[in-house]
Length: 296
Image (cartoon, rainbow, N blue to C red):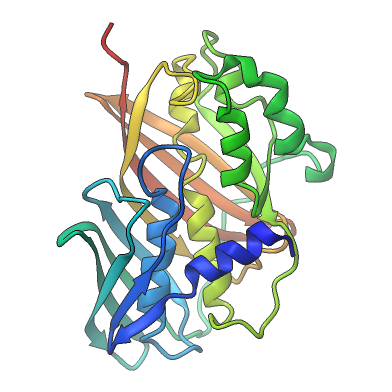
C-alpha cells in the first residue's frame, strides 16, 4: 500500500462528532473544488456507519448541489429514513460554510438468494499490458492547458492504478470517436480488514470514489474534445446513481465499461458497467454532467 492510498483511506475515515453527524477533511484537487468522487464516497461512509456491517449498500442516488471548498472540512448529517427487515434507507446531506453542497440517498440490503442473470463482460485486453498513468500522462503533457497539469493529475490519482484501454480524450483532440471508453482500475496496494471502515463497505466506497473519474469521457470522445485539462470544455457532475449487484474487491482489477447515449443543451449523460476480472457484473453507474464549450 503506497502513501497515497493510505492518505485516501484516512480521508474516508470520518470523524464522528455527534450521533449521525460526521466530519470529513478534504484535499486539494486538480480543479478549484472538491472532487465529486470524494464527497460521494465520504457520504456513503457516513451512511454506512449507521447501518449494520452485514448489510452493504445496494444503491445510491446523489446530487451535486454546489462546488465544494477543498480548504474546509465537510459535515455529513445522516437521516435514518427506514430500518426494515431486509432493507435500510439513509439520507445524507453534506454541508460547508452553512450551505448544502451534496445530497445522497442510499439503500442497504441484507444478502439473500434470488433469480440471477447478467449481461456478458465485453472484450478487453489484459490490464498489465496497458500503459500506466505515470507512463501515459507525461507523454502528452504539452496538450494540457497549463504547465504542471499532468503532475497534478498524477498526484490526484496516485492512490488508484487506472489504465485506459484506448487513448483517452486528451490524446485524440479534434478526432470524434465512438462514444465509448474502457478503463481498468484497482487500488495501489492491497487492502486489509483491520481498518475503521469494514469491508465490503470500504470496497464499495472506493469504487464510488473512482466512478466519478472517467465517466464523462465518452461524451468528450463523441465530439473530439479533450476535456477541462485541455481547455476545450468546462464541466461538472450534476447527479450520480449507482447500483451494486455483486461482491467486488477494490484492490483487484475491475473493468469500467462506459458509454454516452446522448448530449444536449449543455448536459451529457454517461453510463457505466463495472465488471470483475472474472466477468461478474458488479456495478451499474449513470451520471449526468454539465458539458459546455467555452465562449470565445
